[in-house]
Image 1 (cartoon, helix red, strand yellow):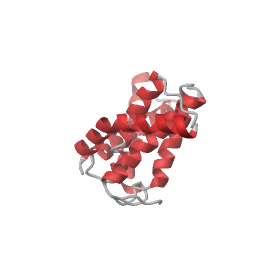
Image 2 (cartoon, rainbow, N blue to C red):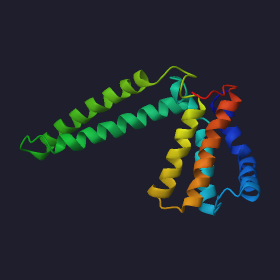
Image 3 (cartoon, one colour):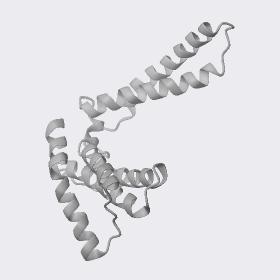
Image 4 (tube, rainbow, N blue to C red):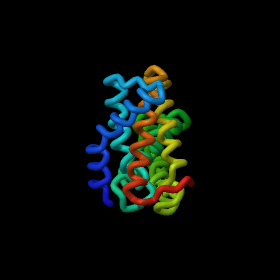
Length: 176
């Protein structure tokens, strides 16, 4: 499957996730709180997760997009460190040198991103990584944006499920 098919599967199958979460809540008493905010964030992370495992494929849109974002973030972080460490008298000189150092950091991140990525359909295409994604989503929802535990639990479940949807569509369900 390709990017469009994975993402469309995520977009279209979200009502099934809502049904599953509702049944888990009703029959197994899983303490999900499916507030509008939790369901909207859950939807975003579910759909994003439906293509996220392909981050390990160098030609995948998500890999190419993430690579650019990482390069910009690293370059900016390096700039912030450099601008406080160098002084060339005139502000324009200092800023130019600091950004040159930042760009070097971004360039290293650009090439390092693909180099550090495991082989396609390796460990990133696993239930273990789906679990990590779900846990990070739960922690972000609870501690990053202060959702209640029950809402964050639903968001984490949605993220995990979207990632797992990708694995199912690839017929590549493996633990690690």
